[in-house]
Amino acid sequence: MKTIDKPRDDEYQSNEPMFGKLIPDDGLLLDHLASNFHRTKAFMLSLAADKLIYRYTKDKWTIKEIIMHMIDMERIYSYRMLCFARNDQTILPGFNDRDYVLNSGANDRDIKDLLEELEAVRNSTIALLKGLTNEALLRSGIMNGHPVSVRALAYHIAGHEIHHMNIIKERYLSG
Image 1 (cartoon, rainbow, N blue to C red):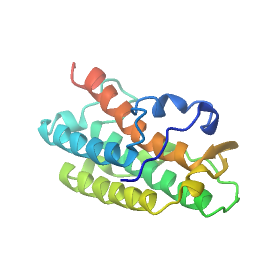
Image 2 (cartoon, rainbow, N blue to C red; image 1 turned 90 degrees about the horizontal axis):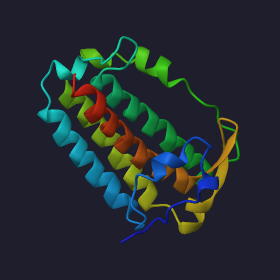
Image 3 (tube, helix red, strand yellow; image 1 turned 45 degrees about the vertical axis):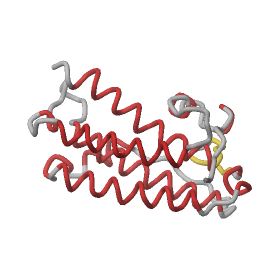
Image 4 (cartoon, rainbow, N blue to C red; image 1 turned 180 degrees about the vertical axis):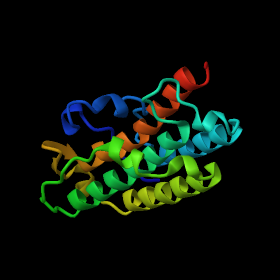
């Protein structure tokens, strides 16, 4: 079984180590990515349809938009992992996640369709990580003006999902 050691805080952008800290320090990142998805899917399918388009305040995303945000972010971060793992030193720009969500049409999609897309992206991420050497996982590049390692990007993806599921449980389900 492939293990991926947890990155040091200095391998992340300055605002991102918090996501990696949500993942156990056991090296079993691939297992966590798979099990996180299955928990997310079961949780999303348990929610009433009206909850999926609920906003706990005017300018916040709906749950469907959060799922779409997770899909977009994982695609972008996986691309960044691929670039840096292949030692491509192109400086990669940031992206405006609000614009991506605003233009996603997520609320018009069925939750099962969104989850199917998230699963496809997650399986692709896991396959990419399985194929990387330990050396490639330690490579880094510049993203959004900050150095970041491949393994930090991978841990960010896993922790980012947990972060958003926690927010949904805390802020969306009490209203």
